[in-house]
Image (cartoon, rainbow, N blue to C red; front, top):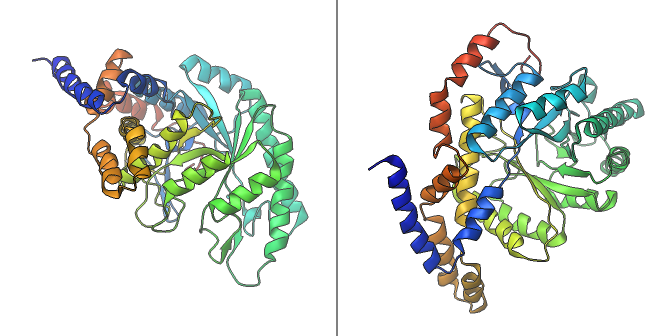
Amino acid sequence: MSETARIQARYELLVEDIVDRGVDMERVKDRLRAQAIETPSWGYGDSGTRFGVFPQEWAAQTAQQRLQDAAATHRYTGVAPTVALHIPWDIVDDWAALKQYADDLGIGIGAINPNLFQDHDYKLGSVCHPDADIRQKSIDHLLECTEVMRITESDVLSVWLADGTNYPGQDDFRKRKARLVECLRAGYDDMPAGARMLVEYKFFEPAFYHTDLPDWGTSLVVCQTLGERAQVLIDTGHHPQGTNIEFIVAYLLDEGRLGGFHFNCRKFADDDLTTGSINPQELFFIFTELVKEENDPNSRADIAYMIDQSHNVKPKIEAMIQSIMSIQTAYARALIVPYDELTAAQDAQDIVAAERILQKADNTDVEPLLQTVRIEKGLDPDPLDSFRASGYLEKAAAERRDGPRSGWGS
């Protein structure tokens, strides 16, 4: 029996099982075909920890090479049509030319990410800094990024701040809050029409006494202050141990303020590991909340699904493809939950039945479904195996080994 025939046989058995649960299989496949996951340019270049950068001979060294790798990721997975840029890591002389280059590669420019943490002037903060000149510098950078958005036709300004303090008494909390809103408003007001500002949060690091945007509640308050086009961005690695992220997802969806995700995985803190590598069940629970929102005919949610990882010890593109496949698996399992049955069990206060409904979906092998969808899209059923067999990394290493460098690890 051929590999395709084996996949088809397993798929037919899975269809019988899923249909018996009262789930519309064609609707599930339509959702999977429409899935879009944005990859980050910085995930293709050399990166490291605070202790150092770990170079890889095939890592992308320029903005153009990072776009090449993003396009390769999309070519093998079929679900990564856009790439996020980080300014100034991806800075070029001609943004229109870079956009055209991306178009020629078959991908688009996604979120624009300002860098408000790496410049030495930002040691005590950027938008929250007590010095008005430093705050103006951060505003000027936000406006630089909104101009890049206009040229590249990006519709998302993704803001993460390292602002905070390291010692008691270092600065005034309430004054810093006022500065934060004032500076972010300058960027918010200058965004292109229809664009959104996604405000990320992180509970600690590099500031260890307090962080100006430490949690989803603080981010939500800032977004509500800025306006309707400001929404909360959840980075799955930016939470204290034991945080129920799926609850945060549900709450923000109900408030109409969930703007997007930075997917990654962690064990202890913000480890930035490949998505799904540590706690794949958490990813499944997150997607059950998202699918419930998708199932609501009155939903107006517009959620940007983005990867943000620092996979330092894995080959860059392979790690990105691996993460995409984990996200696809979690989404597929969430799609086959019989939500009407789940609601009935919840209404009946049948805790055991409700839990078993989720467990059954989470334990289902959805690989034949994902493989079938890929084959129907003209893709190899295993994107990672296909990429590994392509020789792309070896060719990239030969071309890039002694070339120019730009970005985080330059």
